[in-house]
Length: 567
Image (cartoon, rainbow, N blue to C red):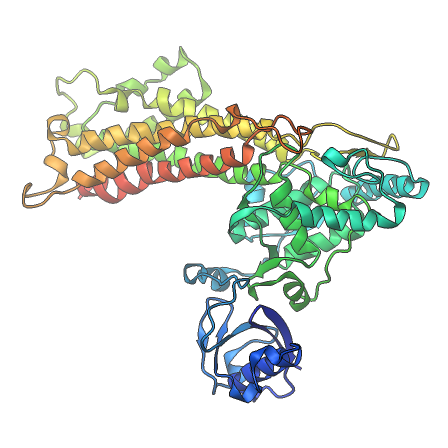
């Protein structure tokens, strides 16, 4: 029997349908009837027949025709909203933005799996998981480690031992002992109280990365989560059911408590959740629509889900991978610029870089030689000025190996730190099954990824800075020997005059964004957490810097200047 989940004025209602030939109008009317039935004052209506309404899908907000049969208009278990005439949209309904509709048609359930063991995840793997290319499973070794870790927690609970976060409160309340019959309630209360983030929700790709990374950390076997609960979390990931996680709220101190709490809130069936099937809806209904049950937290499991640096680090993985891609593209664009401006390749000679052997510098010089010195495909432009009297080029051309090179080395340095971090246990307390005990420490602190991502932003920004100078060189006729602003009939046409202004504006904005977030600190949790990393802001700023670099290095010169020159 088909069934639909219908949103009416803040209420989600499950409406079964015995006959698929019934219409969209019937579904709306039946949902309103059930809504009225559940309200002491009938919701302010005399009867459902008096209510005028529209019905639209939660996926993309597409309006439905009330006369269409349900079997034609909707899929089984689809989510829809009834909008009553005269009502504004319900304040707790999160619409799927029209620009995000592509996510529904784009998503295809993956067939391949990545086996997580907590030790061997790469930044590339995590980005692929975020893009929905793989499902997750645990290795047999990881399952055993998780089980042994849980045995330690069960022993603590049985013996009623006083251990932070298991039989005590949290933060300032660490000395408050909790009665054994309240331990499960303690974990639920923790998740609810810490779900205090603000801002827009993470896009699906970033939320998948966050959830996948938390699963990888739990698979290490130092968190004390039960195998049963961890497998439930994996099932949620594999169904692409993604909790509402606001992008703001972490200071990167005791881990990313606020965002990870929102992640856990959806897993226990509270708050909002998104899936390609449902769009945004109440978490319990999204889980139910995918045949899943909310997680019931056991002692320590709430803390196991929310304590760690996974928000900072998952965003850091995306930043590192995008930085790696734009660094390679920057070399290609710079080589094209040198070609167009009739520069020389002598500055990329092997011997020059051998005597200053930074790995990034050597790599970039090699790329330039590969792109510009081809015996099989000699450049007509290069041949046209082979015997000119120009001795050397401007720094923005000649010094690319030295300037781009240190960016490459910066990315490699940061990638090493991020790779270590995504395969690290960042809980507190840590559960050491081989010793049969828990130990409180500070692995949750976000200083490592925060400092690294600040460094990444500073390093990658230089690609935009030097690109902007090359764009100026292309547009300025006194430097390029090309038409002013690369346009015919200058004056009548302005050409790429303002394109260069845009490039300069992006560089200027990046200068502010590159100020390190991690040099700041605040005292939180009544001075229990008296030094924080500000890693969440460092990660978000790094991504914004990289976005500007992508526009400055690739979009503006390729789509405008160099494209014109080659034509």
